[in-house]
Length: 145
Image (cartoon, rainbow, N blue to C red; front, side):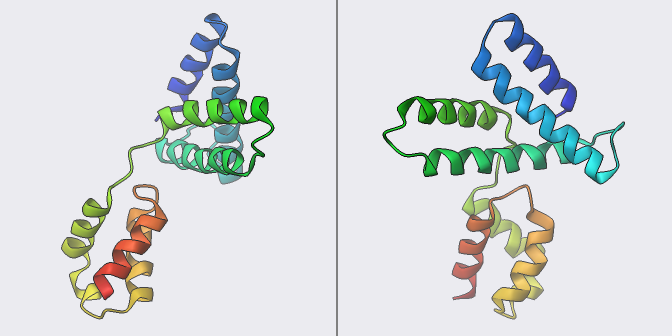
């Protein structure tokens, strides 16, 4: 995902007077800009950084939905809307089967040790941002047993 695409979508939401969508995309743009400043790449923001920030914001939105009290219906609706908008921009994640085949193909020699810690250390560096950490952990646990 490119930052410019997010900006264009934010402008389109403003023109359509879709406040909820505009607010969600605006928070994404702000988070990307902040992360770019923190990493020192303010002028040329790579798409990997944008994807990483989107995933982080998606996780935060999911936590908000999960932790919101059920009797706060209006707030819960706002959180769900924000989560749904951010989810549209999130990069596609690998499935458990794809992760398992990737590990068997690229990490056969580490997999042979059956040492879960070593496998996780090797795999997480390669698959961070491409697959959910929980999915990777479950797959590695299944392959080690």
